[in-house]
Image (cartoon, rainbow, N blue to C red; front, side, top):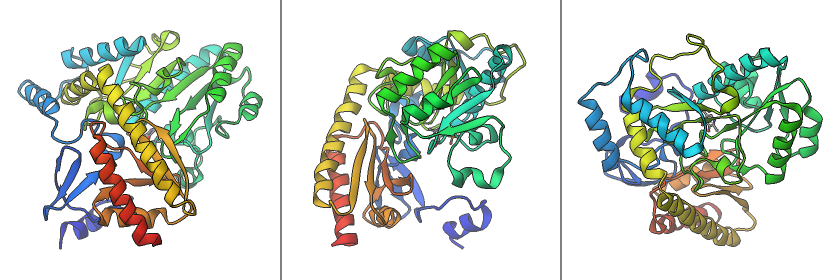
Length: 393
Ligand SMILES: Cc1ncc(COP(=O)(O)O)c(C=O)c1O
């Protein structure tokens, strides 16, 4: 039996895998066991911000490897503290709690909200239709997509869905009992759909009036992905807390929830915790990643290459007006919505050596390593051209 058959036989069957038996990553490419190279515009689903085998990440991990692999959170871990300090310095927030994943970061925010709500007699949590916040039961309760929730009810009570970008619905939904509103500045899994600034302005104004909590899910948009270190920084919004993961660990499992003034002291000792969260190896890799990505020149690079990518996709879309609906996104989080056959296109692109995945049903989602250059964009567009020619003639 080959490894693909073994994967299907031994692993819980929840992923539609590419038939790609990976040997290694090299920069912005994956290489299979036969030496075929794939241009990776999926990057571990927006994780490998600095691509594969980045020397600074390797150096940081090796240095940590020679000290310790894991320590209990009962001990002081200097790399963990330093990464927290950097995140606080970069955002002006107050405190950081490290997790192993995005969904755990959301769970932490939910717990912080719940505790705050008991002191303020508020209980309702609002999230946006089409959003994605994770798969554990709390996060799933605010992941407002039927396909993810339907087999797992009852979920957390008091979670309510409103349409994204619908200011009237938002105004109608919030009241004195509103505890928290969660949002992704750009809905990733929902199809790379940015929220309107007007909608967000209204949300923050309503927070002033009703005193609820606002949480930004920066798990996909964060750590430089959009050309801002965190996307909420673009328009100067200030959520009460945010969740970050994916790119944060530079490829190792690491997430965090980060709290502002209002919630910084919400947890008493023992009320929350984790065995692995903030693992020193992950934090060492995270610190190397953050120190690279947070440089203004790096963020400018993401913005510039991202703009070029969107421009080129715009030109490309002009050639296929009957098949392409829209180009969306910011920085290197870009979506190309097609009318139909998104999955066929993904499979055909894979055959042509280009990797991406599908979000929101019919959007080709591109979240490449942030270190790509314009030449990689040109290569991706060429491969897309080939793919569309084969599919649509
Ligand atoms: C916006 C957003 N929130 C939460 C999550 C969940 O993160 P994780 O898969 O690390 O639990 C994801 C993952 O795709 C995400 O994109």
